[in-house]
Length: 270
Image 1 (cartoon, rainbow, N blue to C red):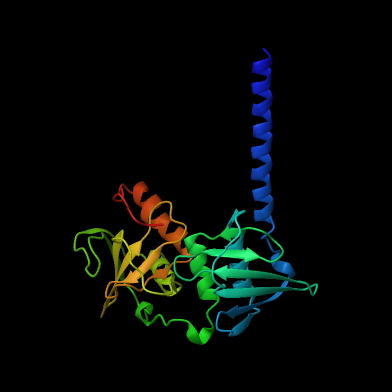
Image 2 (tube, helix red, strand yellow):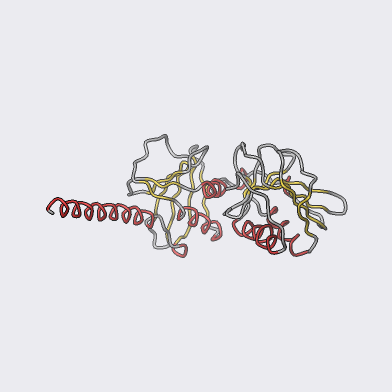
């Protein structure tokens, strides 16, 4: 009986200990949060010493949303100097400092006066990379410009990079749907660096009276943010906004199923 009681006691202690650890991690995650209304500006400095100051509320909101998605890890980082450092200037004259390792495969950051580090989701890492690039360094998106009146959009299951599957699965001609696709493409943000991607999920073609614009699309029913690539490109990708991703998912999956079309099995979209 004493052995059973001892075992039960040890079990209770273990549960309490694990609970405390989990609570500690949650508390650390909460400490990354910044009240958007309290931010005056964000000054970003890269590893070359160049700096830029962000005061646009929309950009500041993107920054705060990105860091709030990070997961806390109690391990202390022992790596090279950060790619970027960001100082968040608050309206009460105080500031909070962050160090970011987001080039290449890294997606990490630390916050001053805290131990441990934070791991960013891939999509939010891309968001921060684009925010931290000065306007004159941001990549042009000429191959995503659509300046004509689109009359029809076709969708096919993708087969390979660099070509469009001629076996059309669905098409759209109504103005509202066309506008959603065009807006999603125009608002997409280029992903820094060269990509090595899996086979796309879909081929989409936008058709005007005079031209066709073909893109590969990575998206599935659980995607938070889809990705685009011009069919003529091989390594330059563009991240869709979360809003556009949600709109395309509704069209391609929810409404498509309601109308009797079941999308093909998707592999590779994030």
